[in-house]
Length: 338
Image (cartoon, rainbow, N blue to C red; front, top):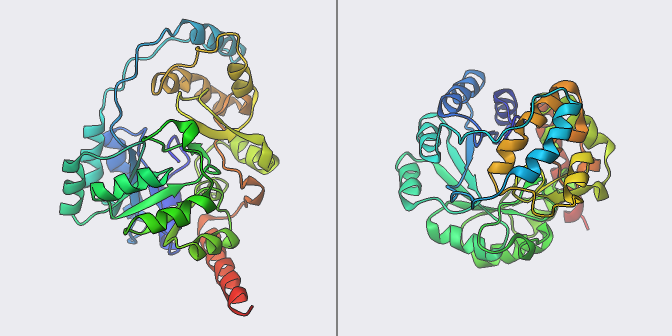
C-alpha cells in the first residue's frame, strides 16, 4: 500500500482493533518513516509493522524519449509542464532501513527479493519479527532459508505490485488457493496468505489450507482512514472482478490495477518498448499521477486493486477488523456443524 494508501491513522486503527497495521515506507524518506512511526505511536500502544522494498539492482539503460513523448500529451491535457526524467532519489535503501530500525515497528516486512543477511540479523537483534514476500514455493523456500520468521504468499489475485524475484513474472502467476497449501508443505515457518481475500469467507478458506494469518490490502483501501484519493475509492466500488489487469505501464514493474485510459493506451502503443524499467517509469509518471489525484482524473491514476474488489466496503478500519473477525468465526462455526 505504498504511495499514500497506508496512513498512520489507518495503521493505528487496525492495530487498536486487534489486527496488525503496517506502514508502507517504500516511497518515504528516512525522516518521513520516523515521523510516521511517531504518529502511529501517538494513536495506539499496540504493535504495528513497517514494510520496505528489498534492495534492487540499478535499472538497465533505456531510452526515455518515446515515453516522454507519450506523457507530454497527457501533461498538456492536465495543464502540466513538459515531462522530464527526474533525478535519482536522494535517499537509498540503506538509509530507509536505518530509519525502519528506529521507527518503533515490532514487525518488518519486505517484497521484491531477499534482504541482506546483515539486515535480517540487525532486525532480529532488536527482537523484530521479519516477514518476506513470495509468489512461488521456490521463493518461499529461499526466504525461509534466509532467516525470515514468516512468509507472505502473494496469489495472482492480489492488487498492486507483484513480489516476484526468483523467476520471470509470467512464470510466477499462481492463485492464492493453489499457492498456500503447497507453500505450507514446503516451509517450516508460518505462511501468511494474501491475494483476493476480502471477507471472513476468504480468511476461513486460507486458514483451512494451513495459513497462519492473512494479509489484506484492497479491503482496507476503501476504509475511511485510507489515504488514496476519493476517485480511487469510487473506482474500486464501480469496477467488476474482470476489470483489473497486471500492467507495467505506471511503474515499470508488474502490478494489478483497474484498467483505465492510461493503462490501455500505453499498453497498446505503437512503441512496444516505451515503458521504462522500474523505478524509472515510476519516477517519470509520478507528476502525472499526483496531478490526476488533485484534479479527480482517475483515467491517469494507478488504480491498484485486487480481483476481489466487488466485496469492498466503506467502513472505519476498526469496524472492518471487527466485522472480519465476526465473519470468520461464523464461517468456521458453520463448517464445524456440518
